[in-house]
Structures are given as structure tokens and as C-alpha cells.
Length: 106
Length: 117
Image (cartoon, rainbow over all chains, first blue to last red):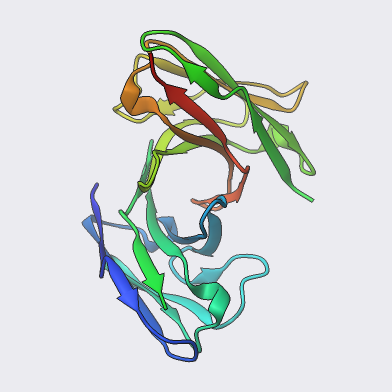
């Protein structure tokens, strides 16, 4: 499975909406799809699992959608702390695959 | 609270071996599958391996298959990654992560492995 994220870099301002995309090479159950946020020098943090469910403690300005091969992470009303790298993930039968990441910058 | 603490990283010569450890606390370790994920400097995330909650099943990424072995000791709440025949391209921060609902829901802070002569 190959996951392709777009765009590679997204430049926005605080208060704007960010829309990040991820396309998978194989259609699968959307339950197996997740999004992560990673800030410099930190471990990744789970944001969204099951394509659209927010992980514990994740603000409701983060939302996930999609099915089949096309998935989207939307961040409403960007806060300064949201500028980071975002990865999508597909959980296969015996492996996890990550996208190459989208850098969200100010 | 869930805590995962990796250790064992360092500088190692090519073709040598190294064992990483991950100490888990704050949850019932023996009921969760566990992953290793790595990140080369300035690069993205690469999944390395997963082990079932009871240690009976293991799966590996293609780049490490046959060289790395994941294991666990549920009596000690510890996860391990034995790495052999290390290559320069294995240089990365190695994270251990708990298996959530078809995702990795908690991550350690990582341990850096540098393969260099």
C-alpha cells in the first residue's frame, strides 16, 4: 500500500482553515485509517482514528473524513500550536503504512 | 497515565548489533500489541515491526525483515527490538508505540540510533 499526501507543504495563517489530503493505493476499511501530528523534536501524536474519530484530548477543530482511497484532515480556525507536520496512516493486516507527511507552516 | 520510555540507543558500527528497550507503565501492558516505528533524520515515519499482546505473532517491515527481532516480556512490562547487521540507513530515532484501534495511540519520546564507523 502506498499513501500519497498532498500538498507537501501548506502555508496558512492563524485563524484560517487547513485541508490536508491523503490518497491510498488500495481501498480498505476506513476503520484502519488515522492521522498524526508531529512537532519538531517530539513524538507523533494520534489525532484521528477510524478516519473520523478524534483521539482523547484532541480539540474539535480537528476533523477527519473520507472513505475508500481518499481521506481528508480538516483543521478549522488554525491556532499557532497547530503548525506542524501531519501524517496519514493505513493499518493493514500485517503492517502499518505512513504517508510522507504534509508540513503545515505559517 | 500511559508512559513509554525507550532506551538503548547510541552509536554503533555497521554490521554490529544493538538492542533497544521500551519500558511501559500506566496501562495493562500484557493486553496490548506494541509497535516500533522509526524516523531517519529529517525524514518521515517508517513502521518497523509489531508484536501481538501475547508475543505469539510478529510482523516486520520489508527493510528490516530478517535482521530485526521484536520481542516482549509481559512480566517486566518491557518491549524490545534486537537489531543485527546494522546499516547506515538504519540511522534513525526509534519510537515504541502502543497499538490502539488500528492506530498507534501512545508513543514514547524515542531513542536515537546512529550507525557509523
